[in-house]
Amino acid sequence: VGFLNGMFSLVKYGLSNCNGGFGAFNGCREGIFSRGVGHLAFSMPYNEASDDDQAEAVVSKLSTLLTSGRLSTSNKQVIKSAYIKKLPDANAALRMAQQLILTTPEFHTTNTVKLSGQKREGTTSQQPSAKPYRAIIQIMLYGGCDSFNILVPHTCTGNKDMYQEYLQVRQDIALPKESLLEIDAASSNQICETFGVHPNLPTVEKMYDDGDLLFFSNTGVLTKETDKYNFVKDEVTRLFSHSSQQFETERVDPFEMSHGTGILGRIADSLKAKGHIVDTISIDSKATALQGTPNLASSPFVLSRFGVSRFNLGASSNNMESHITAMNEATVPESGVFGDFWSESLVKSLSQNNFMYEILSGSVTNTSFPTSFLGQQLSVVAKMIGHHAERGVETDIFFIPNGGWDHHSSLIAASKVKFRELDNSIKAFADEMKSIGMWDDVTVIQTSEFARTLNPNSNGGSDHAWGGNYMMFGGSVRGRQIVGTYPDVLTDDGDNVIFRGRMVPTTSWDAVFFPLAEWAGATADDFKYICPNQDRFPESHFIDVGDLFEMNTLF
Image: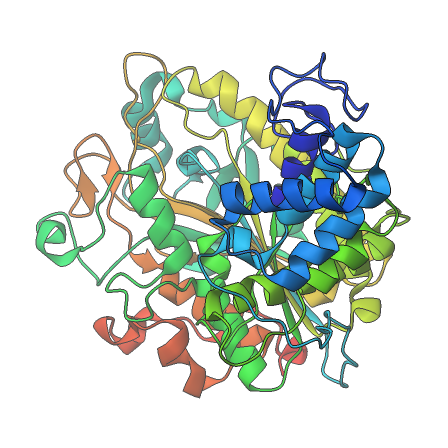
């Protein structure tokens, strides 16, 4: 839908940002290209003896240029009829023909298409069962969040002053002890009885104290349990790289045993196989994490943080959508399979777009959300959760990408801003979920591709590292605990510390997502599919679902 809106805008307004256009400037008068930075220059003035002859000449020319002459007779006729209705304005008629041909299966594939004359069915909401609703939200902080300034050692009554070691290693990017928000970790069997949370994360501190938030310590991409002496031979993921570690954090399948899928997509597949009605939704961009097995899962829906962009706003005629549907009817068996896939996907996308637009266009939240990027993303997620019953959904799985965390310089100042945005956004989301009675039904897991070096660089920043500290929260979470093992050595002398304070993770993403999947309704027989790499870890590596979630919230 977004692609077609952009192409329609290019045809009608030139390269502008009007109605989903790809340009930077606003110019929303069809056929007036002065505000765009460029426009389509192709033209065919009225030169034929009759309207029908003119339409035939134009559509045939477009078919040759845009489909190598493969445009079917029936689709050609639809476009010709729409062209004629725009005459005598030959320019407006050409724009109409160009837009319509952009929606055909012949334009998007190299197939020859034969229509059956049967209308395709769009998506319809299903009737949910009595299963309890669940929502998983993964917030992915792209760039590598400096998570050892999220969770800092504070008071340790053992043999070593861990805060002093933290101060020694972090130097000018360490947080002053008096600024930290103290949390009690006495029951978590960690190196310290008290830890400190970044001063710009007061909501995180409060949710922890309220028992709704926990931390996973020294967690990250991991092929098997290892240490600094063996990680080179043990780890198959290319480390310290944004692209590879982002990919693997979303995939959690280092040997690609479920090729092309992501961790959330496999959870969705497992739930669907058990009869759950599941939607997978990414905010603002596609996500590897949500990809399921082809032919088993429906395609994830990409939703803008501003809500649903209506298809073909400012349409060149009132019946364009009916023309588009007619050109993408069901096909006969001998028709090209790729063309059929395009048409099926398009009709379902248009139907889903209209359905979502009707739901969200008038939706408002009880809570005022921040206008930050993440605030807007969580606002639209909150609206979707609030309307899960109308959508006929039993499980929602959301992926929220949030960038700007790659602080190679000025880390202290930059992270203050980002942590404040994060804290304000999750506060609004939690308040909204509580106000609509959904707090116990949602779990948010915060991730990043890696943490950052404990040791600073010369620009007051830190660089790409590995294991980090992450949080999970929600009304069902058994919070007020730090799960995993916080490092008891922060200097390079530690067995799990690589050069400049890069921590080798001791908790894998497999161990984190196992119990989260079980909370959502997966069972033990699903785990091999959800985490294909599980057999490379000992049984003791994994965490029981009852240790992370309140038992009365489980299936």
